Image 1 (cartoon, rainbow, N blue to C red):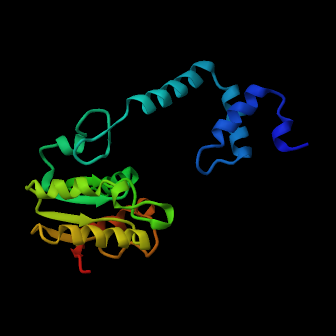
Image 2: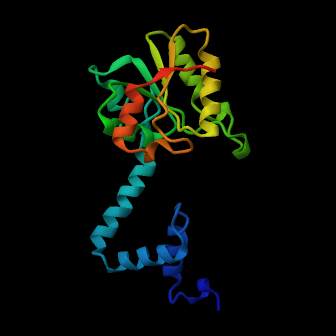
Image 3: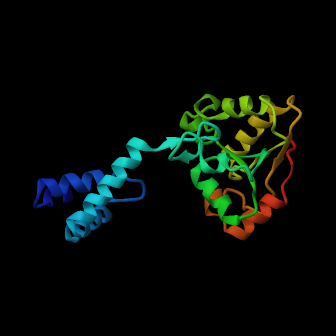
Length: 205
């Protein structure tokens, strides 16, 4: 008898099937989580389900930087105390959160939504690269900081963006290599990431 056939309830099996779709969650972990929720107060489970549903249906993406937001323009882009002439290019929302934790950066962001990866079928048109180019060409940007993870895909994306910005007159810099090769930015400790930002250097192809 297979593991899938051992469930005493179809509803339990259905919940485990859905939970195991999440990244990093196997069927055994999914079963443990579902059984835990069965022991929770029903109001707590309803609150969890409602918050997830509300997140999926109501979350927005900032019309300036593409960070997750509750409103049309995120709190960072709306903050007049931030340096709007400084734009830090990152791969994803987690990277924004990691950099904000360092408290070393006071500019704005641009979230690409990934990196160029031909092996995964991800090209420049699948990312928010053109909106970055348009943002720079609209004026007001002094420096673009390339803060992508130091992987082959990250370096490829850096080079592509650099070539696209070459004739704009803005400074293009890259975070210092205090971040280890092949490490993802979001998993770098705050001190190392902060120093990498402060010690950024001009990008050279």
